[in-house]
Image (cartoon, rainbow, N blue to C red; front, side, top):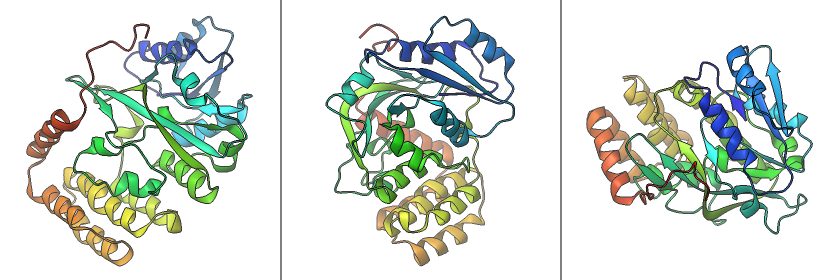
Length: 313
């Protein structure tokens, strides 16, 4: 788990750590990596009295991928799991995911999660990942207009440490979690298994600093080009036209239109849905698109019951 610098509330870090400490899995270690100088966060961590807690401090920020890689190298357990400082696990997450599993399995484990926003809570994804679909197409060539249709959050992931050390997160600070999934499933041949259980809580759209909120569509374009054969043509065009198209449109980068369309047709396999969405990003005002997304979420997001995840389950 990496602690984000300049977080607006140190209670977030404590909440995340307490959710790990409450796990019913009998044996675990909690490694928190503080990515860069952050004495206030370190002071908060020193006040947590749990012998399983280990804190690693980076003198200079490494970025989320490199920081997690370092933490995994320091780990002693047979399994590796991840949690951001603003999210949390439900108490039986590890027990449910690791039931019947061996560290010798060539597997990446995930699950569904509850996404909590200031306005509502939803259970994502609607469609579980299946082995008949490459992970990049599941994420980037969605079958539905709703983001909730296909979703895989890093705090849901568990995998054997030996497998992680052969793959690791990307270190470009762009899609480093997807880099891990691509390396594990396509380079190492690991099976990705997503449980239907809701075992993780993702806190989204809260007014605080987040590494995920800082992006540049050009950097993401460089990232997917560097992935080469690990990305299918259909996923490539979906990523360019839908993911990057939305980002570039929100930033008013009109010159991105030609670049993304050209590369999508040259190296990808655009679908009518991808092209229609791309056109909508540039013709429909951002505020209206946001309202449409919210309406779709309410209609098909499998709204979660209003139960606090911080109460015993």
